Each structure stands twice: as structure tokens, then as C-alpha cells.
Image 1: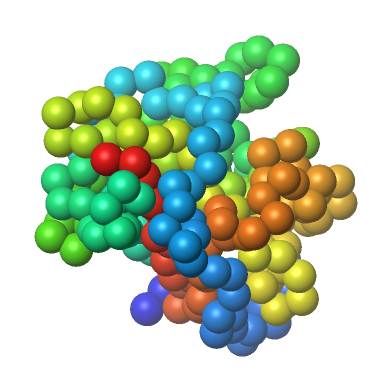
Image 2: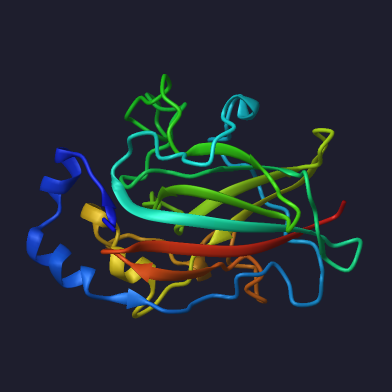
Length: 231
């Protein structure tokens, strides 16, 4: 299995020696992977400045859309916090996140993001939960941008299209974690905002927004997360 989805620009920007060294490192287990151990609803967070403009138009499991980066498979389970956290079948789950360089599709050309990606739609998608409340997305490991830790945005709707929860997924940090191994891609980690200082995650003292992330650069990374929503 090839662990990097690449184009010449990003591949050449990353030094071969550092990639070869990092590819031998693997994350076996990190994070909680659940929004709560007591069946409380996940924290509600902002959709941020870059929400998907027409989420119903991106029903797809593979959201890579040609973007370069290390493969990430995200498995997200949606459960009902009003009913003993049983899985919810038929819920609509939207996710979106930045690319390896910290840019979002559908936006740009302004002060917050100088590169203009208004006409493209990478790293955005929607899936419908199965009988186990599960959706699976194929993507790339997110990069980072000023003021934020590595994260994925999530918006959950019921089958009728009514909003149940807007939240975000945080990534474990520290030595040996996927965040440390990826090392900010070509940007490095200088100026990176860690979860403890992030304006979204810093008040999450129970780590309820922290995913479990395993894998390696060579084989790709796997993220698992359970998100409890009031349904």
C-alpha cells in the first residue's frame, strides 16, 4: 500500500531523507476516539470560516479530489446521546478540512487565505450512516494554518435534513503521534497551535473531541471517532 497521495509539487518540497526516516515510524494507539464515556453529546463548535457551501452536492466517500498528502481513512460513528448512545442509522455526516498546506477549497483570494481555491471542492464530502452508525471517508492527513491545531470539521443531520450537531475532531499530539510524524508536511511545526492553546479545543478538559489515530506514513493513517448527538 502506498501511504502518500502525491503530486510533483508537494513531493519535491519534502526532503527524501526525512520521508524515508518518518515512514518507518508508526502510531499504534492515541486519543480517546469517543465524544464521551458517559453518553453525553459532543461539544458544539463553530463551522468555522470555511464551511461547505453546498454539502448535498458532495455525497462521496473518497474526498481526496487530487490533493497531495499522506492517506487518511476516517471512520466516524454517530450515536444518539438521548437514547443510551445507540448507533444512528441514516444520519447525514458532512466533513471538511484543509489540505497539506493549510488551505480550504471553495474559499481564498482574501486576507484569511491568500491562495484562491473558490472554484474547487477538495476535502469535502457527505456520507450516510449504516446500521452501525458508521461512515467512512478516504482523505489525506490535514495540514495546519495559523491559530489552529490540526482538525476536521463535522456537521451531522438526521435523515430529514435537520441539523443535530456541528462539532470538530482534534488529533492527539506529542512524541510518536501522527501529528508529530507528519510534522506539518513541508511547513514544519514552527508556529503551530497545539490543542491546549487552540481556541476551539482548549476548553475540552475531558478530551471528548480527541480521535484515535493509528498507522504510518508508509501505510497511511486511520482515524476513528464516535460522536454522540441528540437525536
